[in-house]
Amino acid sequence: MAAQLRQLISSGSPFEATAGYSRAVVDGNWIFVSGTTGYDYETMTMPESVEEQTHTCFCNITTVLKQANASLNDVVRVRYIIADSSFADVVFPIFGQYFGDIRPAATLIVAGLLKPEMKVEIEVTARRRS
Figure 1 (tube, rainbow, N blue to C red):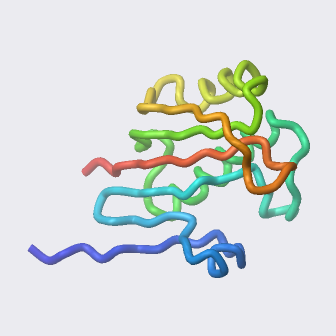
Figure 2 (cartoon, rainbow, N blue to C red; figure 1 turned 120 degrees about the vertical axis):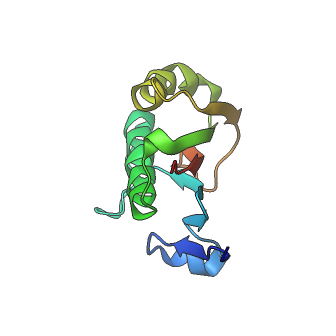
């Protein structure tokens, strides 16, 4: 059986090259999506509200998963990072909109993010089903 090649996926952000990482790595049926903030790559802006940033995170993650021939339905693990614990009650229902039926294993962490305008970051691991 031939070994499957690793595929690197980029969002096109110059920061990926500077920091030496990929937006996602596909290894066989596994897809590892790097921590993704709510940065809107179409408008090149960061939405102000935590709600908008959360929806934009999921939009960015969905785009990357599609490039890997996968979808949110394939997500088995998610890590949420929020910059302030007061955001939890705001973002939980949004998480449920995207993952309510999928129910991946999940962890929520409260931590400072790279820039003050960043309020949420989401990292997922997915596994394509044969």
